[in-house]
Image (cartoon, rainbow, N blue to C red; front, side, top):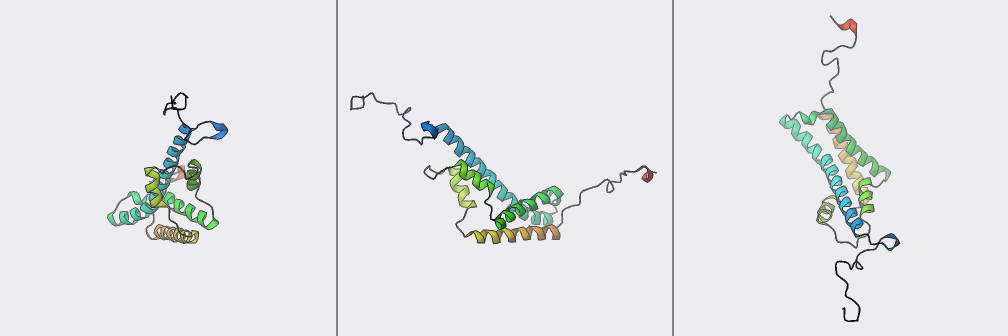
Length: 172
């Protein structure tokens, strides 16, 4: 009994303090799943930023140390495309899709931030005017483009480069 003549409810089953979802159903498991997915998107976002920023440093360092993989054509094209996409989004005024997805998966601010959310948000997001980010993204994209010219990737091997021929007249 709870002191008012009613049977005491188990704390395990008392979900009244948790957020209630659509149609009054308790969606505690769904909420945890959404936070887990939001953290996964945040980790993906961090990996994307690390690829763009760290990739440029790796290219310059790799050229100095003779690392062959930094001259890989596909790595360099993907790296350039990654920062190019960010710069275009900033110029056009489109919000980052990963940020939008994370915000959608993590509705409201009433829940406590997870460890991952707290630290990665501190590394990724700053409270600056949008024009500052646009300028930074454009300058970084220009630096990546300049790097593409000054430290060019290795040319893709073609059948001519390997000595193979495509016509019968070229054969001995």
